[in-house]
Length: 285
Image (cartoon, rainbow, N blue to C red; front, top):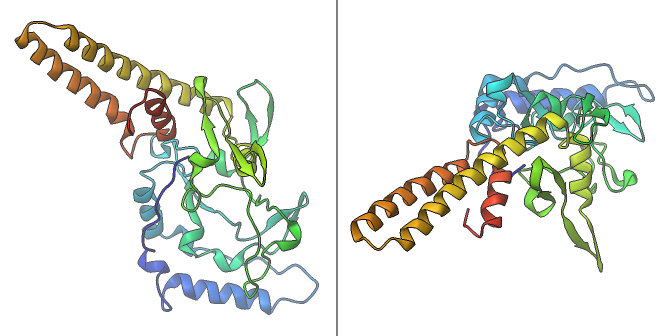
């Protein structure tokens, strides 16, 4: 996961006359007019699936999952994911309706996700254990009493999930060798502790599922191999005495380093891993 600067909202979500605003007002009226004391009937949200939104998110995230950086375009369709769930939200282990209905067509609440990060289903993890992961209707907060439950209420909740358009994931996640990831140690008050946001995000998004770890490890091997080739060429250049040979080796090293840096391109999968490796080598990203 990497930090992504969100751009302007697509026209379908922008302004008082937009389809997004119309749906939001209808959703609010639907909830307000529901029979008190009973769960509101389902409301059909559809604007978030508009092709303009789908394309805008693909461009913004370079066709990668917002959470794990898997290139979904090469492996299957993406889910247009609501960071705060629209229809229902899990509270104390139980599904509770409604969800964050007033944010269903909010540009800041929409993210592209691969199926495995978004859908709760059985997974095998890096330690060979099995279990359920996937965000689905989960949205854990620090204090359940402060959960944001109403379109008219003030937002006081503090979420425990990383949002790459709001948070800097690098401050909460530490990518390790062999494709592994762990919560970064941060300071809370006077204590050094694993980042709660990092820990919960790893668990909910399933960032340690085995297939994903293997793909990150493969990326790690490729980046390291490219850097080692470039560094070897640089060392050969430094040791060369012949000016012509030295110039040839300099150009060769430049091309190899350029090839290694291609792993830092915005559209590259698992960019967080590549950046970590470059920093470990003492190189700028």
